[in-house]
Length: 387
Image (spheres, rainbow, N blue to C red):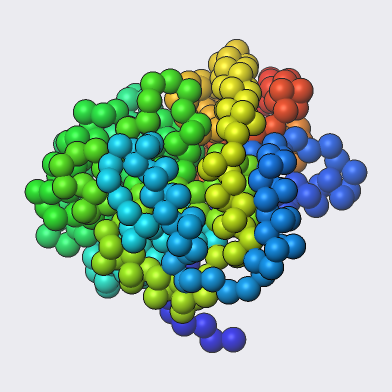
């Protein structure tokens, strides 16, 4: 089959490829500990499940408005006002089946052939994939281990040209778990204003913050008018399979994204949107417990990794990933991840799956039980000692 040339520019999310390899080994009788997938291992809270089931029984089984149901968009706008302390309305909200469409639609709406996009590296691989797919030019913003995987403002400014159209931020970050300090966000806002650059701020891990408080670039003057916030329900409420996310953006852009929704998936599931309202309105005890449990697991895995000779691991401030350096083991990060799966039955991801500056690191998700994390640490220790 002769495919369009743009298909050669489309990347993927390696976590799903590693999951397939791990499942194959399990089918052969191997015991595999899964630390590769970025998905909470908790169940969706029961009140949300009940609301979704009731919605189905009440007839929410048909098409809804492409940008989302009015009642959910209004509720999300209220949530954004509470969590970011900015003023938005339902007209600024677009509801999508998961958070990734906001990334894709942002690129399709704003990036033309040859336009440049700044993005975090190491970073979520779909950023670079989408930039390439729409014909944009990816400009990596290196996250430096020496700066706790944060950015260098002068370095970023030196990359900006007249063609730079968009800047992608992800704080807390996947895969590093790092955050962008408020002072750096303010300087990025100044660069955005000075060079007329839009910002897509991926804030999907906002609730998974273990130190300090969340800072959004939208708090700075005029940034509400040039920022697309990406958020959703998948992580906070363990609703990955429900497929529901949303974007907050200027009204003009929201109207265009509504058209992209109509032309692609029509709308987000109506019953899922009703469940999402319950997620926001209902008790937050279960999500809060989940975050506390992740904090305990974070401390366990970081301390455990740092006690293994040849591995060093920074303490992530958010999300549910660690990004340890394996350079001193003598293996490349690809060799380390591949051999660890085959020989020790622990599934992780090579750092270069998250970009060129991830070389020498591996990503482990601590979205697994304490028991399995302890078992994985023992296996990693034994594996390293055999190198």
